[in-house]
Length: 246
View 1 (spheres, rainbow, N blue to C red):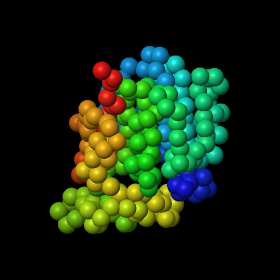
View 2: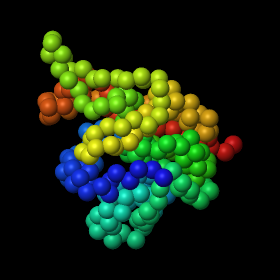
View 3: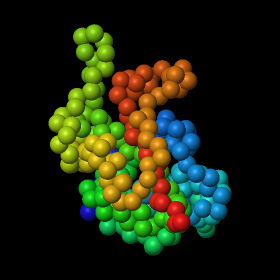
View 4: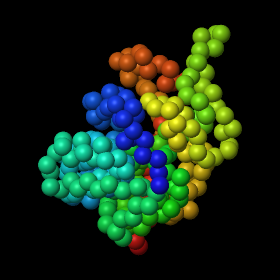
């Protein structure tokens, strides 16, 4: 079973104060780039893996999705998601993504924001997502960048020249890494970019776009406090699709 850190009192309290928890998608700096990678949602059946507070579920419905299934392991996250909307076309389900299975060809789009780097058996989940998509269906997701998951300890530091440095530990040694982020002992699964790409290809996906996200010049004008995010990419954004039938 995946670690359910989001139901930890200390973690949940801290996470609830983050800009992306307070402001929703607009509080997530990578959202404009991720949004541009999405297909048109009119009439689409959408699966949100690790839906959290349901921000994307509600956005998808507002942008034409016919139905949305949001899945998360956290009872507290789902309770808030359900409280935010009574849209009958949005369904929320509590499930461990390590074991989650969806129906065959049940969705047109699978989406996940910053959840898949918690999954130990990601290859099994990706294979199941592939089966759950219709031919031509899309998988769009973000994870913490591997440079971010590599350290066994949190945080960047400033060197003697005044430049931000990020400690990278044994980058090629993949597997669980423990960090103290909002709470002690948060377990994330470190993988290289090559592993993500090859895993998707083995599962039958065709990649269309990969983005190593950092703030744009325009974003830095509005948020100069994000300048350190240019020192190393924070997120890896990926768009891929299941082959269409001939």
